[in-house]
Image (cartoon, rainbow, N blue to C red; front, side, top):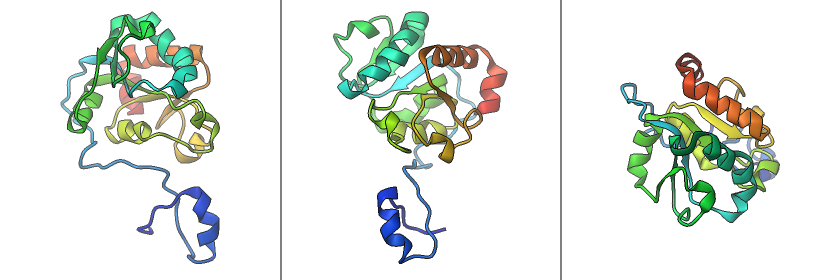
Amino acid sequence: MPSVMLFKRRMRALDKTWSKFHLFPLACDTNLLYPIRESKKMIDILFTGRYLRDREEGYKTYLYPLIKRFRRSVVIIGSGWAGNLNVKDAKIIPGITYALLNKLYNMAKVCINIHRDNSRRCHTALNLRTFEILGSGQILVSDRVVGIDELFEVGKEVIVCDNKDEFLDNVERYLFDDGARKKSC
């Protein structure tokens, strides 16, 4: 395997130079993010990420209905959420150190991911959280990003949803079905 990681847009130019190379859109540091086998599941549903206006479509489709259904079972870690009435029933933790992130992922029954609104339409524009959660060995329920099925086995490595109902149903399934959750992790 090559030791160089490239963005897809640069691949065409380098194709003539190197005989073989592989695309790695992002990754995670397995020294920082890894499964903790004896971790107790003290968080039901975890979303990590600061509030961003260019995620509002995703919040309205996935996060806000999730909070409406599960209320205080949803934990949001990130800045910028203060004063947002749509998340008033969730537990908000304004920010944490990166070193604590792995422990929190491992304490969650279900981790969710919501990409920036424009990213969902860009081929393989996955955010870092995708790789952090999977690197921690946790179940990931995510919105669909074009091309995600080229990088992961959807339904096995990552649970991908196209709409609100599918998202809510999958979160509920993996929240309450320990066997299904462990099988997917």
